[in-house]
Image (cartoon, rainbow, N blue to C red; front, side, top):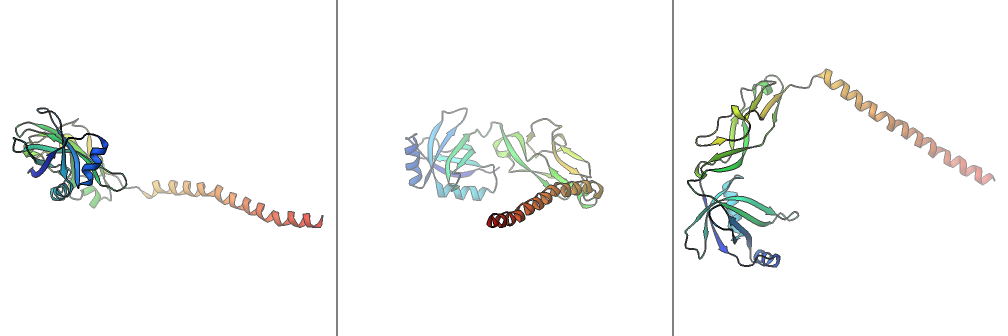
Amino acid sequence: MKSLALSAHPRTSTRRKGSRKVRSTGRIPAIIYGRHNPPQILEIDSKEFDALVHLAHTEIILVDLAIHDEAKAVRLALVQDVQHHPLSGDILHVDFHEVKPDEMVSIDVPVEAVGIPDGVKNSAGTLEHVRFRLRVRCLPKDLPEQINVDVSNMKVGQTLHIGEITAPEGVELLGDKKIPVFAVAAPITEAAAEPVAGAAEGAKQPEMLKEKKDEGATAGKPAEKAAEKKK
């Protein structure tokens, strides 16, 4: 994976008011942490970070973070977490996880199906995406944006497990090899669908009876009023 350049500035205030002040200037509060250096609070330009996210086109973003007024040129880091405002969607905070170029990292990567399964094309089956992310271990430069899996040969009733997926070069797939990732389910037959339809009709019946009861109750009210007038 290619790293993208991003600049940052040291931040001194850690309180909520300080974070609000940072956002009011068009910057985003951030933090960088890792095993080899103590955590450091930062602020990054919101427009620059937005442009970087759009340029990446993936959830996995590796950056060369250049921190102003620091002796070290750049710090290689993964975008670990991005916090958004629940209503406006604005970015509130960014976490960076510092990594070393020669150090193995473990991270969850999206997994996507490629092709149309034989069981879908020829047997009217349904492709089920059971697991959407896979945990991988590799060097930062070998990080895949996503793992693409060819499912075109899968037939009805067949399941593809982690152990059957070929990882990209330099990448190790972690987790139980028997965990399913994709499956092709058999189509629903008419015989199986009929009881469901019958059950639905039966469920509607009490509503019809209730409506008739309500109509009777409503029709009785004018008669009661007429009797009151005669009295």
